[in-house]
Length: 123
Image 1 (cartoon, rainbow, N blue to C red):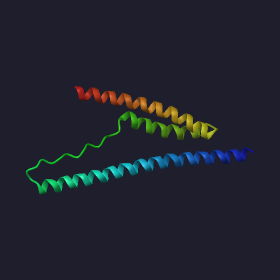
Image 2 (image 1 turned 60 degrees about the horizontal axis):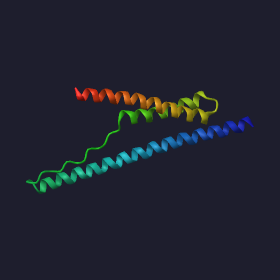
Image 3 (image 1 turned 180 degrees about the vertical axis):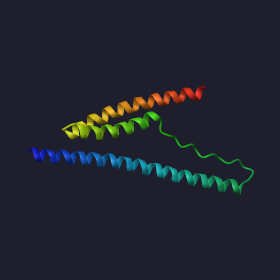
């Protein structure tokens, strides 16, 4: 019975890891797609500017960057999930708890960094 539970737990951890990997892959694909469209828009703007030299070129919309808070939450969640799964005997439960705690700590740290960056820009 214990061996079956260990197998089930390890399968759950593997599925959760795969879900994290899949979400990161999807995020990377979205970023690559956005970069592709940005390049296309930039090329169109360049060709349009060359065709009509007197017309001002339209600037491509600035790509929205992730805040330090969002980055911290993501990194913290991943790190917490892995650490929680390793530390806790109940792997799935440990991963879930680690994810929540890690995301909270990462978001808090990122918010502090965002605040200091904002202060520096104001000065």
